[in-house]
Image 1 (cartoon, rainbow, N blue to C red):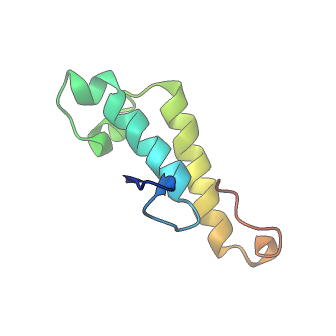
Image 2 (spheres, helix red, strand yellow):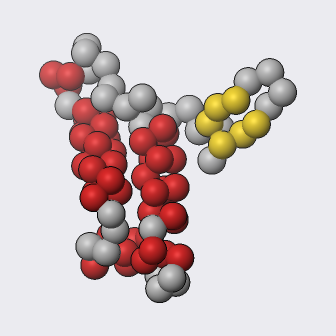
Length: 81
């Protein structure tokens, strides 16, 4: 969710993977599956009816969430942006 404050433009959610989550959400909602077929983003992902860009964002989101749990990567930082 994007908040537009007068002095700062950014996400309301400040969690480590919030940027990738927001990009994935907007990509899914802009896809033809959600617009024309009136399906939910979850159904579109399950059926595989989304563009390649959304699938790549989904993989990046997965890797970001996995890096939060991986103790070996905790010193390197999170993969999100």
